[in-house]
Image (cartoon, rainbow, N blue to C red; front, side):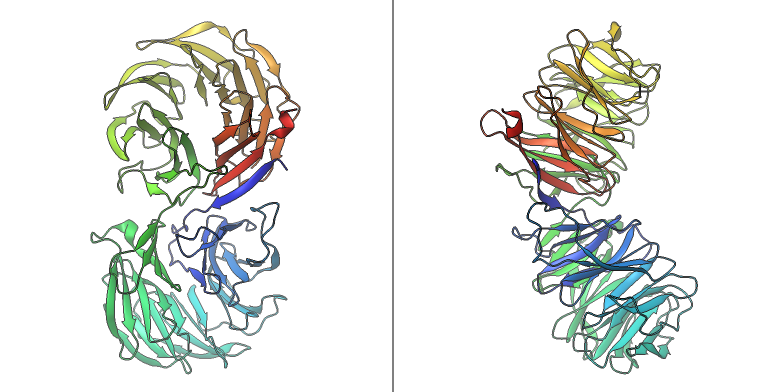
Length: 636
């Protein structure tokens, strides 16, 4: 294989559900597992870890809701919105050699409920699982992980169960909590109803956890109450009311069972002693309370207390230090825009939720990405879908579906232009001072003077367009025409845009993408069927129509710096490398991302000397992946 996968950079957990978020920790291998979209991700718990690889599991058809490590750390049980539970291999000893992005092996899978899985847990033997959530005839199911045989019944609830836990020692006990404001205690296995403890919570109970020694149970809820129970009998012991200034979402125990931490919507994580039950310490994510800083999940690792913010950030606290020692950012949704600036070594990415991140790219043979930082302060970036990112002079330009064109310098906004023509689709840099913005049926040109940007001229196309490109070294713009299935040519100046008489021939399908090579000689036009037609810009003659390996819409493509290759991606999840000199020789990597590939960018390119190159790709799964290419097949 000539396109070789190198490294995966996972997104942040998806926290856009109206329920708490359960993280899980593998103490043996120091890893965290969480869900995001339709995927499940395993990543090193330590943000400074440079040796362990992240994994992505994509075998769920529906959005995932929870994932938990088995006690051994070698297996993960994950659930989704339709009640499916899959058990899969997460062992660090079985890393594939030829494909680092290969899917983990599924050991078993079952549909245990008719609605979303809210939580799942393993017993200490790693043989039994209890999964809970919403359902019609039941709200929980206990079964063996390999055969799916039932090992008892989860009773005592009349509405959704939000959390479940199993006592870590024999004799096993289990506890469930939910919207019914009750903690239900079970004996087993086979697990059977023992008692229901009510009257101590006045609102939804969000989480429940046995202490590591099995002596205690703690439950927390939206009523801001922390309740303590006997771990062997399930009897109520004591409680603290108004433990936080907001609803409480999660619990994590210290390994010695003398203390535990809770996370809350009041932006804090608090540490509690058990005997007596009292507050010991408070960890503050941000001195200024914000909705995006609500803490919706927490775990205890060998080194850190890790809490999860509503915006997907992972906060790393060291015991006894009130402020986070580190904060890990990332995308929470599909990555919709990607741009690399070679001069600064920075990669910019934007997602459907409006978040903009910047990554430093290491200058290695196979580049690695640093931990990302946010572009601008919280709330400064786009309010929703980021449609494009470009760079001009020392600035970065971004557009989004909030109808804004932003000019950035040193991670700060220096100009903010409201786009009155509607939602922008694409930006093209025309010259040192001119940039063009494409709308549904309009092109506008803006002029950059100093740190100011202003509208210079515009033209109504009279038809729908999805892509445009500037011809380097000229004053020509190529615009896709969806009405005539063609490419129209426009000539621009600082003050005007005029349509030229000459035009490209018509295509069989609607053109979706037009990309002009850096030397200005070639124009590659990809259509909604996944086929490219490559033209010579001098006389508009067709060079080749053999680039036809995508089987659905082309989404993005990038020419190599020497204009010899085109790197292409599309809705079919495939990445293809096409050659101008050898159009029949194509490098392929199908299923590069889950549910499609939204963007590609070249990093290193050296065809003349080493015949090697590297690039990055981004997808709707929120993942960034780096790749290396062996170009030697094209050198002979």
